[in-house]
Structure formats: structure tokens, C-alpha cells
Length: 125
Image 1 (cartoon, rainbow, N blue to C red):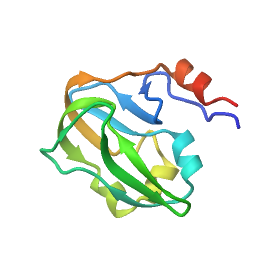
Image 2: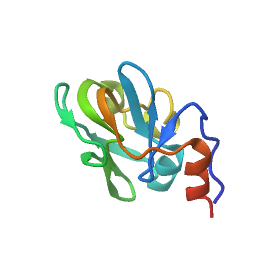
Image 3: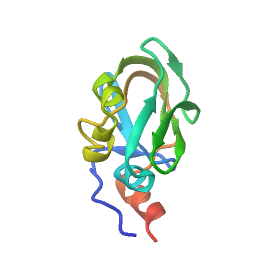
């Protein structure tokens, strides 16, 4: 499987999440994850104000194929949830790096993050 083009300005996790730096930081799942999951049909995400921990499970993504856990790439406080994606989870498949973002977090610490090149090398094959 060849990896879809990865935005070079993002950071990635081995669990297939991406992180866009900012105040707040934004994260979602990669196109690799969205493709592997198939059609996303349900998202279970934390609420605004919830604390998340880097590397810990923060929600679930259900697709027509399976249910997968969502891991936070950062530690901090959830400041925004993409309610449009919750209402229409197919946007995660259609635009995983844009309209399909999942959470915005005020970051206090980051987890183990990869560059686009490192993530692509880990998903190649």
C-alpha cells in the first residue's frame, strides 16, 4: 500500500493521529487510518473542558469495518470538538486533514511525535 500524500507541516503519531501546531493545537486521524477504517459512521469524542493525556485513549472511531480507539498526541484541555464531524462522520474520510479534524486542545505537553517522513516510513509496505 502506498501512503497518501502527507502534509509536511503536521506532526504524526505511530497510532495514526496528526497534530497541527497552534494555539490551540488541532488533531485528527491520518488518511492512512481513514482508508484502513473504511467508511467512518460514528465518533465518540471527549467534551470541551475534558483533560486529555498524550498517548492515552480519548475516544473511539466506528466504521463499517471496525471500532478503533483514538489516542491523544498531546496532554492538555479540550477547547473545541468538531461537532460537524460528529454529526457527519463521513467528513473524516473525505477530508481527514481539513474539515475532518476532531479536537482542538490547549497543550501543556506533547507525546512522541513523528515527522511526515518518519510516519510515511513507518506506514510503507
